[in-house]
Length: 294
Length: 294
Image 1 (cartoon, one colour):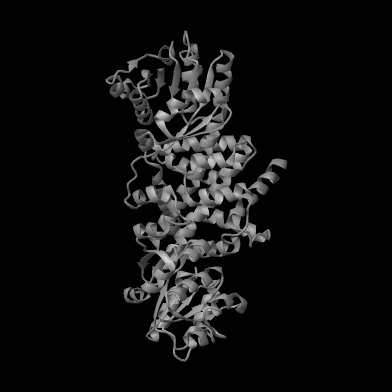
Image 2 (cartoon, chains in turn orange, yellow):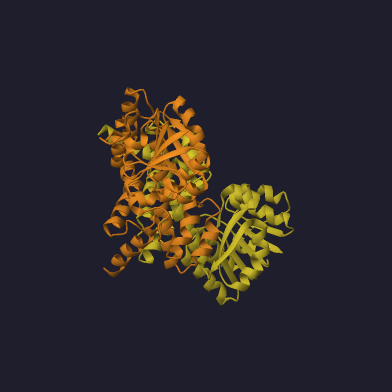
């Protein structure tokens, strides 16, 4: 297929690479052209704007930054829907708002274009290995058309419901992680203060009822004071802000989410937005230093 | 070996059974004699008090209810240390306080008796299958002696440190679970309000970075409104109270633990202490009903 691919950051570059491997022809656009070069050297064609990128292609796939970026690349003056001949299927894989997914779906429908939301989980490693979990919202026919492309990029692909349902599912994913990050940080801080060996503790607790990807994968990084990003604090905070907003719109007050959001907002305010989410441990340490000295 | 086994509830009965299977001679005592009958029919001998039970045995193993029960069976007037000829090794497998574990260790030491704390995780299924995770605190020699007995009851057995370290590790286990229960309840409540199919959501999120034993095992029970106990709210609340107390003594304020403790205290106050921990979902539902109608 002829695919317009928008956004070739850490995730997008790997995902676009799998599509090239699968024999598709890619035209690409991303904010910083330098980040597209590996793909250009593999035969992808550069385009100056999303509209130019999408023009006369079969499908557009995007994975950009904020919901405002999604809005801009689809609905902006140089966006996909402003192309002379837009693609017949739009696939947004950014973690964005369910309401924007529905709006793009509606705008696209008016022009006879299909649109699905398909955010992912699994991080840079999942993107590289093609094992992402892809949570899909949209109409059945559009998803059937998209499926071979999604299968080239992901391992688990589940149709969650109509437009926006993929984004809602991603919010559930982030709500689960939010509380787990708090619990893992607290558990390891407790272990440290109790004089335990954190690695042995994870050996005892990681395989049973307390086990999680979080404690088994990020726990050891916390213990080694390795706060390099698998997933950026600032991106996680963006996601939690969307989840909080969506929950409020549904009349839901979720205390664990509210608490985790406040902690991550503080991390960003402290200048740690470009660290990995596991840096939360250091905030709990600092909060407890202040306390014990007061 | 000749083993005094104290406490033959759901967990203890299975664990004592494995020791009989391994060829040991058991004398048993438990609060409600009826709960010992299956073991008595397999050759275990009944004793009227912990002291009588422990007298002239090689080892005592206990798994009772509250820390006050542990204190009573070891240090009370009819407790193990009041036996005419107490065992040379004490193994308490109750989830109890690190400070009590250290106190029993100290009292035992004065009499030349060894003592280890060895709380477990893995629930009734782990006890039945002999796959419990056993977190052990105490002296090296005592643990070496205990090891064949622990191996008859558990799968993962890790020496975490000196007296009390097993209990501290179990507290880490419960701190992790506390926040995961909040996150799982909130995630599934969000999913329900967003009109998603909870089972499909778990399919998408359970295998990746949001995956945990909690969401994969208790999540489906929440969706089916199955609140029968795997693990009682009242027992979990007891554990969280110990963790909170220990954290305070270390000068630690752990916001996720504090929040989860408050939610579980409310569940017990609402008369739901004998439901399974996954009943937390219903409290979040009720809190949000109140909110949306105000």
